[in-house]
Image (cartoon, rainbow, N blue to C red; front, side):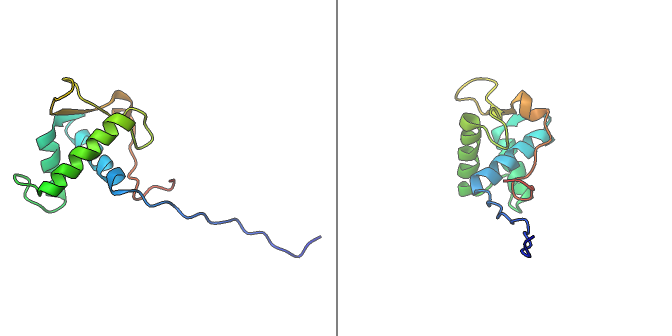
Length: 115
């Protein structure tokens, strides 16, 4: 019998990207609005929670959120293949959570146990 003790290896959790964190914030805001809202309302809500004036959010934040939404629309995210939907079609500013994401308990990638 060996005297060597094997300890479980600790794996480092990957830090989520800014885009992943923004996708979660968009999903959280849409859940607060009942699953869908105009993009300006979503951007204003996230800006307010970040400490900015919701009526005039920083341009950089606005652009980053729109980009993150587009990423979530095209690629999914937060463990879902379909995360967002444009219910009125391309070019619409109405954002909606996809049905599978709306029914799920979304986890913040910054604080989850997996990743």
